View 1: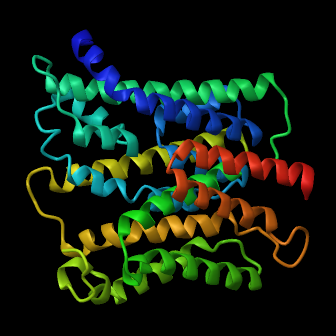
View 2 (view 1 turned 180 degrees about the horizontal axis):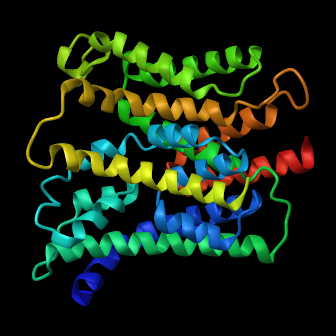
View 3 (view 1 turned 60 degrees about the horizontal axis):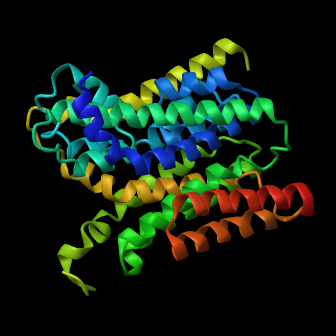
Length: 244
Length: 108
């Protein structure tokens, strides 16, 4: 391990340290509440390493979701990662043996740090990125271990703690809503998501099924592809353009 | 759920998550450009999926019996308002969750 790179990377990761310890703890508590202890929490945090993905994982384990549904929901939730990589293609060139781990460890927060990361003078760039990634991962593992351990030591009524997942998604939605800017059209994807899923919940409930994800997603994709001409790059068409 | 099933689920989650992170490097690592429809979906799908997951989280709320979904909708509103107002992830998530726990355990 390159100590110089590690020491240089640490200050950059402090905001993630605070965030991951608390969100990781909430994950550990949630997992404990559905009957999986500290070892499970660490296992998941080591090999999955995805914040919202592991929150969703608690629900999937608790409801004994079938594997195809586990795969589908995980894919959907992490679909955004596909676009993270696109902006890091150049940066990860020449990182050698560290590259597979850098790709594995590409969470939202690490992505945000890495896109802006400029290694200080005299520090090996590849080692600097690697240090950021490994520090963030260790905070996440530590947070989930602490949360799950607290869950086993102190018994308190955890009913309702799963709302942390809903809250996390609401927070992401608010951030996306702000980032989308002004104009109804820019918020249409979010509204299509709500509308299609609510409709799918009602229909599948009437049919006595709980499997609403596939119909909801199919409707969302069809609508989004059908409205492509209306929705694509609204700032370039300049029709309701206040900002250019 | 047996231990083997749980491990299998976790391995699937890990594999799929890694795949989504690996895909751009595998496909475009040698300098190709993603098709425009992929770029388009990359813009519009994430907000639609997050909206879908919010509804998914609330899918078991009973509107016509019990607490009529009042604690859920109240707390979703509190999280959203806190987040618009302060923009602090931790405050929004923990504030909303603690309020929800108090509501379902002590009020409703």
